[in-house]
Each structure stands twice: as C-alpha cells, then as structure tokens.
Length: 343
Ligand code: B12
Image (cartoon, rainbow, N blue to C red; front, side):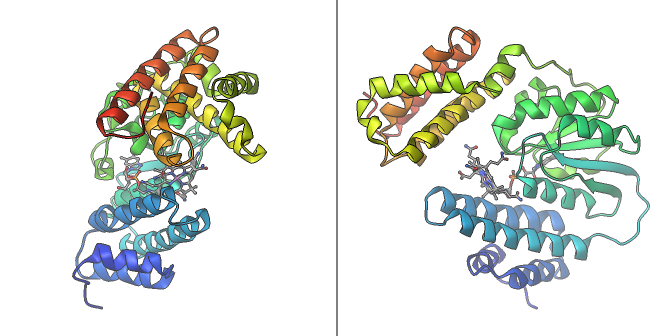
C-alpha cells in the first residue's frame, strides 16, 4: 500500500465513512512506510479526534455519529498497537496508564499508552477509564508498578486526579499527569500534587520523576462544590427564572438540562478553586455560551452564573469569588470577540 500524500485527510475520510478496516489498514500502512508510532498518533489520529469533537459540538454530527467515528479511531489505534509493539522485550520499567476517577475519555490515555509502549522498552499496563482512587491504591499495592501516568481530559475531573495522586504517593509511586484538562502550563499539575506534567507521552520513556509533588488534601469547600447539592442548584434555577421570566416556558427536558449546566458550572468552580485557576470556569462559561448560541444570549448565561455565585456565597465564599472573577473575564472576552450582546 503506497502512503497517501496527505495522511491526515486520507485518515479522516475513513472516519467520515465509518470505515474501521480502511482506517486500520491506513495506519498500519503508514507504520510499514516508516512513519513512527508517536507521529501517526499525534499527527493523524489525534487531529481526527479534534475534528470529530468540532462536528459534534457544532451539531453537524449526532452523538451516535461521534460514537461510531471514535470507534473507528479505537480500532485503528488497536491495529497500530498490535502491529508496532514488539512481542517480547527486555522491559526496563512497568508503567501503569489510567484515566483519573470520573474520566471516561479513555482514548487519549490509550494513545499515551501506545506511544509509551511502542519501543518495547517499557511494560505498559492500561488500567482503563475512570479509575476510582481506592481501586488504584489496591492495584498499586501489588508493588510491581514503577510509575503511574494519569490522563485527565475534563477539568471537572481534576478533583478525582488529586485523589488518585494522593493514593499513589501513599505507596511512594511517582505520578506523571497529562491530557487536555491540565492546560498548557505545569501550574495545574503542581496544584494537584503531581510529580511531573507532560504534553508528550514520549516523556514516559525517560526515567521516572522523583517524588517531588506535594500531595494535598482536597479542601472541604472544593468537595462541597464538586458534589454540589441538588437543593443549591434548585435555588439557583429558581433565581434564574425570577430574573429571566421568559425561560419559564422551557420544556421540562430543557429545565433538566439547564440544571445540569448549572451543576457543570459549579463542578468547574470546584476545579478552579482546587488549582487556583479561574480560567477553568471561564473556559467552561465561554464553551456554554458558544454551545447555547441561538438558544440563549451570552448575557443570560453570565447573568445566571452571577445568580449562581450569589447562591453559593453563604456555603462556598471562595468558590463564589473565583466564579465571579471568571464571569468578569468571560464577559470581557465575549465583548472583545464581538460575541452576543452582554447587557
Ligand atoms: C471521543 C470523545 C468522547 C467519548 C470518549 C470515548 C473514549 N473511549 O475515549 C465520550 C462519548 C465518552 C465522551 C464523553 C464526554 N465528553 Co467528550 N470528547 C470526545 C472527543 C471528540 C475526542 C476525545 C479524544 O479522543 N481525544 C484524543 C486526543 C485529541 O486527546 P488529547 O487529550 O489531546 O490526548 C493526547 C495528549 O493530551 C496526550 N495525553 C493524554 N493523556 C495523557 C496522559 C499522560 C500522562 C501524558 C504524558 C500524555 C497524555 O496524549 C494524547 C495523544 O497525543 C473530544 C474532542 C477533543 N477535542 O478531544 C470531546 C470532548 C473532550 N468531550 C467533551 C464533552 C463535553 C464530553 C461530555 C461532558 C459530554 C456529555 N455531555 O456527556 C462527556 C464527559 C465524560 C466524562 N466524564 O469523562 C468536550 C469537552 C468540552 C470542555 N469544555 O471541556 C470535548 C472537547 C468536545 C467538544 N468539542 O465540545 N467524549
């Protein structure tokens, strides 16, 4: 099979056609032509997943389309891993790759595991999606893992990540964290106590980091926000209907989705507070404004977030403050890009 001139475009065509076999043949063909595994993953498979996400977010593709398209990449990644990883090898270290508690994006973790395992130098065990901290502790207690690589895609799961890091440290196993939820700077990783942060899974081939991360207990206010009470969400929802009476005509399904969105903002607030990074909740608000464009103006979304901050204030004053800080930057950002009218 001759290599396509534009592997990325050729690969995405197989995804659009939901062609499992074509996708697998294409990536194995690229490997046979000498393209390294890490480049096939980062330059072909990962960009395809980002495009899938854009089509899903824009509504061009349904959730079902996204699931099928992702299963094409899962199949291609499995074929690539099978073709690339040497059958036997002298392993220097044993790396466990896991998604943190609550994290169901297992494909990014699998990509990282495939890159780490491709040379055959490491024994790589993939522990799968959403690994509860106490179960991670149980697995690490066996004593055969030299380093844990934790993947976190959703910022809301940074609280679960902190818990997973704490159990690894309890057993003196160093932790490397990666994934889109960590952002583009080591600050969030440091705030949750990781020993190292990396964008590139190739770092797992280097000697494990020293146990330098400072494990921290998750503060009570963060826990309160992370497991936010339905009653708090109900109060914020009622306040929203008082301030924007037009929203009372929403269907019961839309009301339920709105309550979910309020919970989503509060959980992002928990992660922002844990890491002292208001941009986590700011990004979530901007994302919601984009997603709901055409249904609710940005002013209603940021106005509702203000009411949510007021509702949280008595029990979570620090959370309310970081949420307000994020609302201000979101409103500023939307004005700058000429988004929906805010006033
Ligand atoms: C497929 C997918 C899903 C699938 C996942 C299936 C699976 N088996 O993984 C399912 C359907 C389960 C899913 C669910 C959800 N998803 Co989703 N999902 C995606 C999608 C389209 C692709 C994810 C992917 O495969 N990325 C692969 C590559 C691109 O990921 P990557 O993180 O960059 O990973 C690389 C590096 O970061 C690195 N790396 C990763 N981990 C690690 C770890 C270490 C240690 C190291 C060193 C490196 C490393 O290696 C990878 C290879 O280079 C993304 C779009 C996107 N832009 O990613 C949305 C996306 C992430 N999802 C999104 C959302 C909203 C959700 C849901 C909340 C939807 C819902 N309402 O239920 C849930 C949340 C589930 C949860 N609690 O975890 C949003 C997040 C938006 C936001 N503001 O955060 C996105 C961005 C889509 C969008 N454009 O809106 N999703």
